[in-house]
Length: 358
Image 1 (spheres, one colour):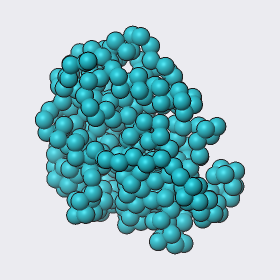
Image 2: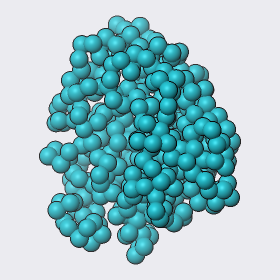
Image 3: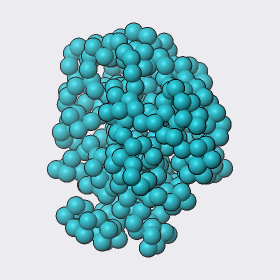
Image 4: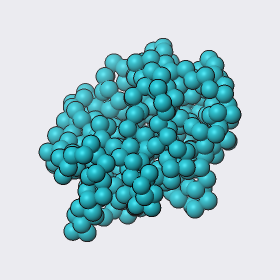
């Protein structure tokens, strides 16, 4: 039996559809907190379940987060051969313009069905919902991944997505906190710099997250995770992106927005960040991230990150435990009925084509 070891505050990706022996040995030695899957890791249901079991067997801690980006639309790692194809958030936002109550139902139903499919594979954390606002002239890296340009509509729909995922037994990740909507460049490629005043930000981008966190905290939801934005907000810290700024994390994310959950960085490999992978990891953790995310599966980079990590802090581990959900149910005939109803209501808004949903 593997001796219990406190995990390291990192979530790693892996190379392919099966673990390499070198990966298995590395993960067993390093004891990362969890793992993230991408399209390259997802071939079939049985294959994913086997990979997830293999990943979990590498670590000794009991609660092992397995993450995936399954938003719907263009950000969905589970392909159409074996899994339903879900609409982007923007489609539900269009429905909200016509009928907000129906859109709230659709947001929760859609998220619930996504969560049921994920949990059947052993995946227990979904990097959704996107809570960034749809902004004019912004880079399309967000685009239809955003629900709406309106703060209240975005916050309301995001709250229902959180409920749907949690009802399915999956932990949501609200992103990209405190807001990526204004970015004029793609943070995968460059560092976005937002020049809006604090007043503008607190009345828009930040307010979405603040409203959702108020509901979570008041209604005693299980805490979702949060994922940081690799963005410089000149009104807050003109030198460092939010991920690596203790000013942004402490004063804005933790205090102003009142986010109390587990905070993970967006991926360290994104070009918005500079320096070595170990430098990026250390800066993010020192700024206040509870864990860092490294997605590529590049072994040299993972070794660099692992070399500077110590065990996860007690405070961060307590936040992690506050997100844990109990219960697990498999899909049923009622879920197929729910899917049919969802199709019916969303078809008119998804490019006018039923092929994208059916």
